[in-house]
Image (tube, rainbow, N blue to C red; front, side, top):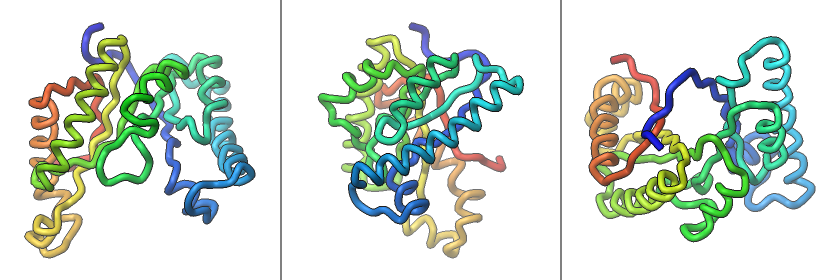
Length: 211
């Protein structure tokens, strides 16, 4: 399968897990079955908004949802049945360093089971961060990318470049200055390092830039 993705793509992202349950429901740690159902029901409400949008004329073929297996497995099935694009997260929620939600030996089974149009990762990668940690991330991401392309699947990569303490200090602790003055070049370097590691990405989702 050729690398890349052609055409319009509008994704409603609600694959938040740890932050969603804590901020919206005040639930820390592993939720109980009853709490899980409450969270899942809230995600169903979000999805119903997407269904209404499609009923009112939004083009389903160019529109999709990014939703997690933990709280949205039934939504995944409804999205595909309704002709929407489905994106599914592969990363473990709330980690500073990328890791697989279902382990390095189990991610493929979960992707195959739900058969998403896009397999998505959220990765925090700063090229000036700990090189050992960056190498660990690149190794796992290479494993994922190779598997996805060997199985004719589309890789959606969401890149965040959080500031290192010395970088933030260099702009007087001003996060706006970091975003404007440092992050664009750091993002370029991050993408270059990821590609140089042999990680082939079909779709890049990057933070907004002013330049």
